Length: 110
Image (cartoon, rainbow, N blue to C red; front, side, top):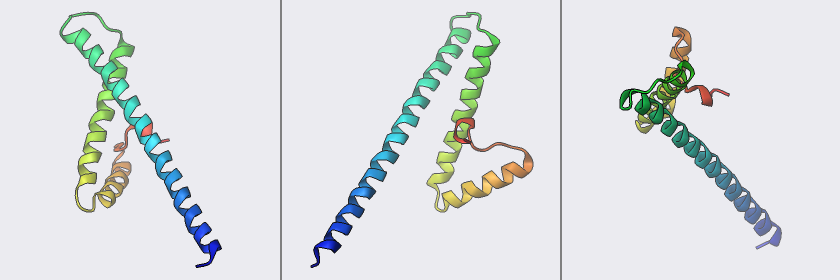
Protein backbone atom coordinates (compact mmCIF):
# COMPACT_ATOMS: atom_id res chain seq x y z
CA UNK A 1 0.00 0.00 0.00
CA UNK A 2 1.33 3.37 -0.96
CA UNK A 3 2.23 5.55 2.05
CA UNK A 4 0.67 8.63 0.40
CA UNK A 5 -2.73 6.94 0.29
CA UNK A 6 -2.40 6.05 3.97
CA UNK A 7 -1.41 9.61 4.86
CA UNK A 8 -4.34 11.09 2.91
CA UNK A 9 -6.76 8.68 4.56
CA UNK A 10 -5.34 9.40 8.01
CA UNK A 11 -5.50 13.19 7.53
CA UNK A 12 -9.07 12.90 6.23
CA UNK A 13 -10.13 10.94 9.32
CA UNK A 14 -8.40 13.39 11.65
CA UNK A 15 -10.06 16.36 9.91
CA UNK A 16 -13.44 14.67 10.30
CA UNK A 17 -12.76 14.16 14.01
CA UNK A 18 -11.94 17.86 14.40
CA UNK A 19 -15.22 18.80 12.70
CA UNK A 20 -17.18 16.44 14.96
CA UNK A 21 -15.48 17.82 18.08
CA UNK A 22 -16.15 21.39 16.92
CA UNK A 23 -19.80 20.59 16.29
CA UNK A 24 -20.23 18.91 19.66
CA UNK A 25 -18.59 21.86 21.39
CA UNK A 26 -21.07 24.23 19.71
CA UNK A 27 -24.00 22.03 20.77
CA UNK A 28 -22.68 21.96 24.35
CA UNK A 29 -22.43 25.78 24.39
CA UNK A 30 -25.97 26.14 23.02
CA UNK A 31 -27.41 23.72 25.57
CA UNK A 32 -25.52 25.38 28.41
CA UNK A 33 -26.77 28.82 27.36
CA UNK A 34 -30.33 27.52 26.93
CA UNK A 35 -30.26 26.00 30.44
CA UNK A 36 -29.03 29.28 31.94
CA UNK A 37 -31.70 31.31 30.17
CA UNK A 38 -34.44 28.84 31.15
CA UNK A 39 -33.36 29.01 34.80
CA UNK A 40 -33.53 32.81 34.68
CA UNK A 41 -37.00 32.58 33.13
CA UNK A 42 -38.19 30.26 35.90
CA UNK A 43 -36.80 32.60 38.58
CA UNK A 44 -38.77 35.52 37.13
CA UNK A 45 -41.99 33.48 37.01
CA UNK A 46 -41.35 32.19 40.53
CA UNK A 47 -40.86 35.73 41.87
CA UNK A 48 -44.14 36.77 40.30
CA UNK A 49 -46.34 33.76 41.05
CA UNK A 50 -45.05 32.29 44.31
CA UNK A 51 -43.53 35.29 46.07
CA UNK A 52 -45.94 37.96 44.76
CA UNK A 53 -42.96 40.21 44.07
CA UNK A 54 -43.11 43.03 41.60
CA UNK A 55 -41.21 42.37 38.39
CA UNK A 56 -40.34 44.86 35.70
CA UNK A 57 -41.89 44.81 32.25
CA UNK A 58 -38.41 44.06 30.85
CA UNK A 59 -38.02 40.99 33.09
CA UNK A 60 -41.46 39.71 32.11
CA UNK A 61 -40.87 40.32 28.39
CA UNK A 62 -37.51 38.51 28.54
CA UNK A 63 -39.04 35.57 30.41
CA UNK A 64 -41.96 35.36 27.98
CA UNK A 65 -39.62 35.49 24.98
CA UNK A 66 -37.51 32.68 26.47
CA UNK A 67 -40.66 30.64 27.12
CA UNK A 68 -41.75 31.15 23.51
CA UNK A 69 -38.31 30.07 22.22
CA UNK A 70 -38.40 27.05 24.51
CA UNK A 71 -41.79 25.95 23.15
CA UNK A 72 -40.58 26.45 19.57
CA UNK A 73 -37.45 24.38 20.26
CA UNK A 74 -39.46 21.57 21.83
CA UNK A 75 -41.85 21.56 18.89
CA UNK A 76 -39.01 21.39 16.39
CA UNK A 77 -37.34 18.60 18.36
CA UNK A 78 -40.58 16.62 18.28
CA UNK A 79 -40.96 17.08 14.52
CA UNK A 80 -37.27 16.24 13.96
CA UNK A 81 -37.73 12.93 15.79
CA UNK A 82 -40.34 11.82 13.26
CA UNK A 83 -39.36 9.97 10.09
CA UNK A 84 -38.63 12.63 7.49
CA UNK A 85 -38.52 15.23 10.25
CA UNK A 86 -35.81 17.34 8.65
CA UNK A 87 -37.90 17.75 5.50
CA UNK A 88 -40.98 18.46 7.60
CA UNK A 89 -39.14 21.23 9.48
CA UNK A 90 -38.05 22.82 6.19
CA UNK A 91 -41.66 22.67 4.97
CA UNK A 92 -43.02 24.14 8.22
CA UNK A 93 -40.50 26.99 8.14
CA UNK A 94 -41.44 27.83 4.55
CA UNK A 95 -45.18 27.72 5.30
CA UNK A 96 -44.60 29.75 8.47
CA UNK A 97 -42.82 32.49 6.51
CA UNK A 98 -45.72 32.68 4.05
CA UNK A 99 -48.17 33.01 6.94
CA UNK A 100 -45.98 35.46 8.86
CA UNK A 101 -45.24 32.99 11.67
CA UNK A 102 -41.71 32.46 12.95
CA UNK A 103 -41.09 28.75 13.56
CA UNK A 104 -37.39 29.00 14.36
CA UNK A 105 -36.45 30.47 17.79
CA UNK A 106 -34.98 33.99 17.58
CA UNK A 107 -31.48 33.07 18.69
CA UNK A 108 -31.08 30.47 15.91
CA UNK A 109 -32.11 32.75 13.02
CA UNK A 110 -28.69 34.39 12.67
